[in-house]
Picture 1 (cartoon, one colour):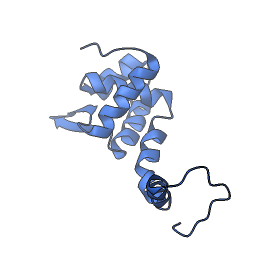
Picture 2 (spheres, rainbow, N blue to C red):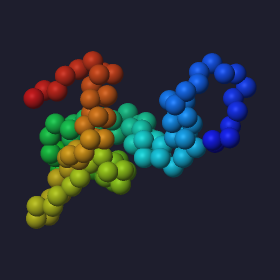
Picture 3 (spheres, rainbow, N blue to C red):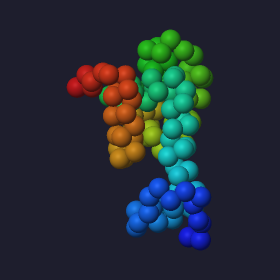
Length: 121
């Protein structure tokens, strides 16, 4: 993209060159697209938001969401594969919670700002 000549020259300077170099590397944008893809489903947003506040098992999440355990498990797999949540096993029970990552915390904050609510804690 370094040899790209824009039809209109509204802005020029070093900032534009940095932006053009980033745009040329589409693979760098994929992790953000993947994270937003997971949250394109309102059920996953609700589950993720819950897990940002509490660690829970599938049965309890299922009860709170008024959904079947298999349906909840399906959403949990998708959220876990994206790295937004983690799990731990305690005997036969598996507990889920939001991952302790910058991406997870940022998405949690975005959800709450869009919904105009605050953390219960």
